Length: 110
Image 1: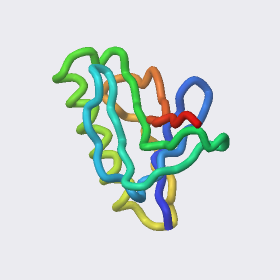
Image 2: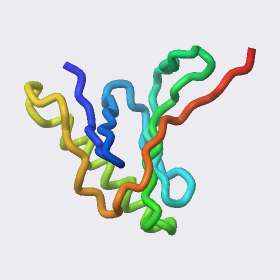
Image 3: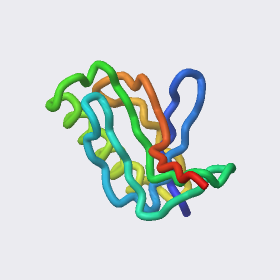
């Protein structure tokens, strides 16, 4: 069974699949990147999804971004050890409030 982190932001629920994650790393200050070892295509076929980027504007220095990254890794671990009958793990207890969620994409021009 595939497990997901469920992250709510701005009235929208985002599902982040936990299978095929190859790493979680601090991105630019305020950002945490969840990277995949597989690539998914957008509906237009013009770009490929490489992962997710979670932003918290109050995690505005390297120490805070590292703390946020560690919290995401801990949430992934907690999600994976829960029963297979619980495929969604709500990500709602991060140290810094999430202010953005986006897919990390590479766009290809024809």
